[in-house]
Length: 124
Length: 153
Image (cartoon, rainbow over all chains, first blue to last red; front, side):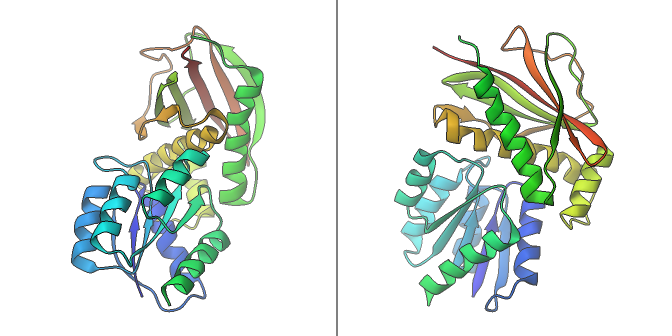
């Protein structure tokens, strides 16, 4: 399974990679990371990941717009939004645009692993 | 413009406490909170989030280098470059303001974080005559959360 990490924070990208590497999950290859929606879309087109973890508040292109583009490009892609934006309207908008799950920051290792397991199940 | 109430400020206090609890399993305690006008307790690194639409002003999270290095160590982050210390304050400010939208709603539009080293204790612009200063304590370190936000009517 191929996964891509999109977040404008270095330490969050690095933390997600570390949690995945140390978790008991089915084999996951991290095929790329991006810090904005524009780079994320280009990288997804090239790498065709199965799952993307997606931040929302990012420079250039935000996560909601990038999610909509990615789902249009690949309707089978699974997108887990990982964001601090905790209002209901944002979550609803992300889900309407094709996201498959929403994890609020700050998150624990266990919460991320459980959210990824849900998407892996959906992908099977 | 209208003032934020004590209950509004508690939202930010709860968010900062929760951040440290989730990230490090040790909540940050509130050491002191007060109103300030011209001089703010800035530390080595500061993350700033501008708010707009239904609100105006900014939120600042400012922490000393040693605290951020300790925080990254607890989070198992080995890269403790200045870039990552700045990233940490930006991410904390972003998380606190993002979490606050659960209470304030989506008409509190928040910017991407601005990350600043050695920010002056005098702010170039203030949305409020007196901004809220909340000093937090985590382990033996102190950091400041400055809420300079007003509600637009």
